[in-house]
Image 1: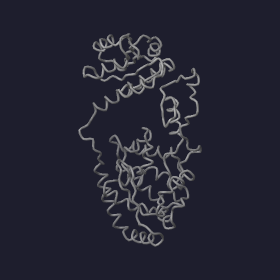
Image 2 (image 1 turned 90 degrees about the horizontal axis):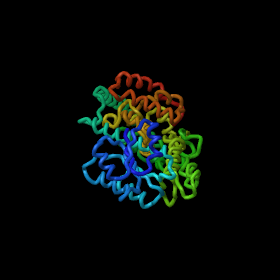
Image 3 (image 1 turned 180 degrees about the vertical axis):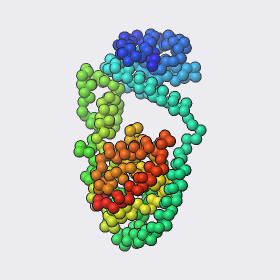
Image 4 (image 1 turned 180 degrees about the horizontal axis):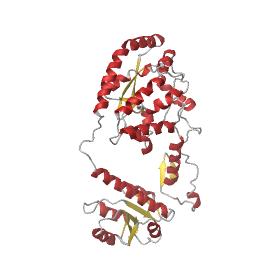
Length: 395
């Protein structure tokens, strides 16, 4: 990695860069910087002071990016003091990051430069490895099996489904089926036989706070804007360890906001599964325990929304929380009626932590991607599904 520093104070950053085996070059003004870039087209990141002889770091950024003469280089701007107008202008122009050099740990600036470099390399790698057909396709053997298996089962269970629909309708008013949006490889209409009272979706938030199986021991957390940042507390009054964010009339440094947000993502639950759900009807409890409520999903399989074996499709509110790579890997596999985590732990009454579920979803995705799909592995999971179809709990 090669850094070009533009300004008069490179001495604090250069030793840190050298310790990380980073090639560090320094020039004092924008003219020297332009000439240096003309001679060296392999600069990976530019770190530039705002105050430069004869102009500013913003002027130099415009020189680099307003024309087509130079490649797009990640750009970090350093200022001696925080200036809200400068902060806003810098990011509006497209500058990658802004630091107050006096109050920021120099190690953090170099680490940010490394992060921008890695992101740039990833972007280049993705663009250089594009394939002509990026559409998602199931293996032919898997799709043919899904259609044949789902069709035969639907024909065989038609009388059972009719009796179940009649029982649902006699116990409670409303439609006998339930349609909801689910997220697999894409968002689709998900079919089930109704096992809950009409209007139960409105109760989910209150119930999730009290009875969520996946809820952690700690209470749900939010950003605390009143708590002082540990790093800012070490500095003089009015100084910040990182750029200041203004959120809903609250002021908080970017570093402290990011730390709290990371902690929240770790401690708050992603999945929602209600223990002893009071919304479930008597018929609903029976069809859940026997998995009869899942039978209409065979229609989803025939339509191509799902497969017989895959990772369970998620409600939209759950899928939106899976933003990290370690969590979102599950979507590399198709949505399925049954899957690895169901056969592993469903027969134990749904006693499963959130981490276990994500680990098993990711394990199936690993076995599905990279030309590692095995038809017989799916058959094994299907055979292991049958002992777990009858369960004691309604989770």
